[in-house]
Length: 113
Length: 109
Image (cartoon, rainbow over all chains, first blue to last red; front, side, top):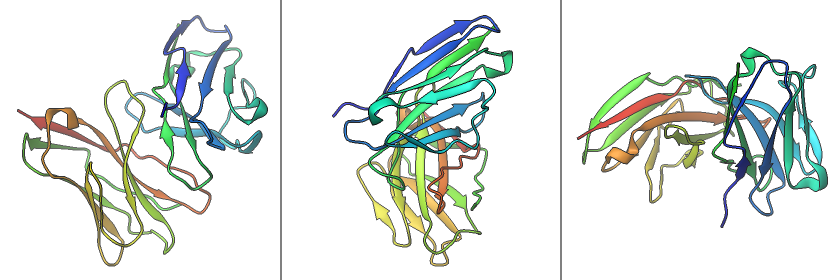
């Protein structure tokens, strides 16, 4: 069974530029999560989707971050414009349903110069 | 949300058992304990979870104390590939994973 797929794996951009990350969850998983992981820290939840609906986005900085999950499968996380402090690893995870075990992708490492 | 406390780092000799403790003294009766690990430059990998009873799978064993205030993850025969950061997480009623800084386990040859 294929795991969670994320792309790109690495991205280097200049500040004020836009950037987007893509996630394809495990087939059949209804719940999808985006996390941000700063260096030396554990991941922090940004947003959780149940099917197409964002049910927990309280930690998403809405002035510059946006996310979508069209058709309840793939998801995209966007930052516009990026700031130096956005440099981090962005992780996507999925679970069959809320409360079930989450499975993580390899992450996208973002460096903002 | 229940908070977990783990040692910052531990060393273990290759081939020996690695015992990683976690304190979760504020855990509620219906909250599960999950363990993940993160090898450098990879996403967190699920290891095991439990509610009250001890659990074992092909990767590890999880021992939860009777009062549920602490648990221990046991890797029975640690290898160099087990070197990673290990996270203990208590899953709340809001289904949110709250990661701490974890325990950095180094397996020594």
